[in-house]
Image (tube, rainbow, N blue to C red; front, side, top):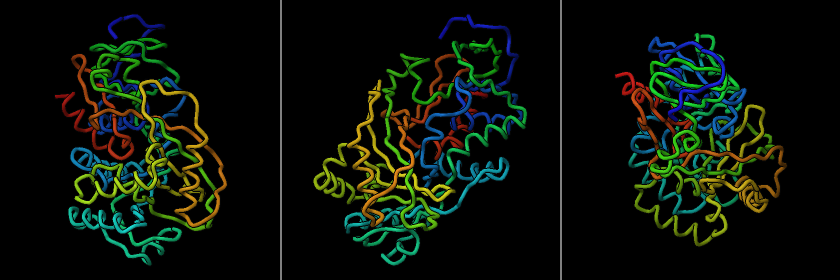
Length: 377
């Protein structure tokens, strides 16, 4: 992206121009406002429609590790503050991990020992008190620090609040060029003191060599909204044994490899679709269920019905019911790479930022301040 050509005249200037109005871009805009900077946000759609609104709305802080855990714990404070300021729905309800086999509970015991005070082990009755679950539950764990938001509301509410604080949003505007001091868009150029490009899995649309070097691919998720079969309020997010294979915090548990081997042996079809069996309850009572994982630089446009059938069958079994009523189906897409975070400086005064591990909602608000500390130094 080196051309200086753009359509239209000048769109003014800003201390920070953010390309992308998903949660990663909004996190940088929010932190820049906190620092007293002028901010402009360029977003190709009329509103955020990507991974930031297609997820579980789960602040899965406790299950992270390394940098992700540091960002997540910082992000928790920011989520609580933003919910109060922007007025969106948030619940400090934690997460319940349901163990349906002894090897799953063994991993939770090891995890609890590693995270002193941040994990509360539960017996079968204590799990049943908190969440609906079918037969075979042996116990579980409560991760009390985790939170939930409504992803269909939260990102839009944050954007509206930022606009009320003076952030200029250029919706339905495509960034054509990014270079030091200038962002060229489909509606004109913006003079930029600094630039953050936060376009998720579309890094390769703007910086293809950088994306190739970082190994960025797209990860497609099958997700569904179903009617709650029990008519019961479920405050926590709910994870399962399959979830233990997906989050970095569990990776150091000594018994995890044996659990992985057992699940892959007993459920090869579910392992093949990368199932993370989990659900959250929406404010209207419906459940968001999923999810699955398929990786490619360019995804096939076709959704396999067999994948949805597996998700529905396993969620029904988890909930102890015969069938579920589907309200909506969708595909989520996020950036994936060997490293969990991509932060790159392709040109002076420019940072490309992508959460390449599927935890953007969980970590972005903690990642952004560190990126801006470096960018503004």
